[in-house]
Length: 273
Picture 1 (tube, helix red, strand yellow):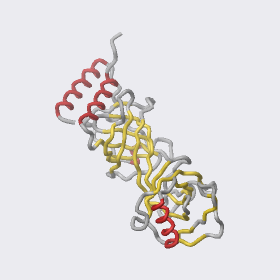
Picture 2 (tube, one colour; picture 1 turned 90 degrees about the vertical axis):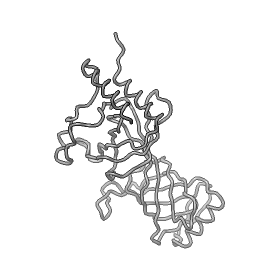
Picture 3 (cartoon, rainbow, N blue to C red; picture 1 turned 180 degrees about the horizontal axis):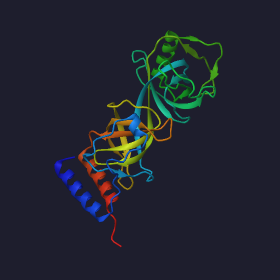
Picture 4 (tube, rainbow, N blue to C red; picture 1 turned 60 degrees about the vertical axis):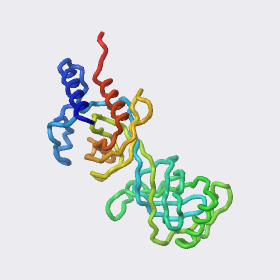
């Protein structure tokens, strides 16, 4: 945002505050629990923030996480992850770029009912065991998957039914293979400004890490696409697996910045009676 836009917004917001029409969030408004888990932020913020909780504004983020492969077949795989993915979610799995050159598109089909958040790895993170069904593999990729299975695993005694309704041999992965799972996830937006937003996430995110993101604003055409920087994260009040996460907009294009400004104007403006 340039200085002209910033001056315009500050001036417009000040007039609305004087008229009593603003939904802006006070800079010193913090949860009682926050003082013990995170430092207070400076009282003077660069941009005024506005409450949008309850307006059903959604933001989407593309995650990439290291996973552990338990077993694999030409029809799918079993993996261990620290992310509570949901049945029906579509994901991409990147396995050993030298042997499988294309990422594998799949769908989460099941979660082990014997495992829940009480299962944790050596670092204390909750772990989940889930099953993935691959989408139809191209002939070249199918050959590469079969080669990977023979090199990195050993066959299990029991075959299973793959997505072509035929018996397929499953291989337990015994080699230390690096695999990456990529998947989109959607968060609800609680507060927004010209500089960033506050969203509710169900997992911990590393501060300063950047993700490709999209923001869906009502009546503003298509989504806003940008890189989001994780600026802060604190536990949500009274919730164990929910976090208030502050995200900075890093590279909004001029057209998208105008759409964001137009939306914020709609929060400020109220027609005369």
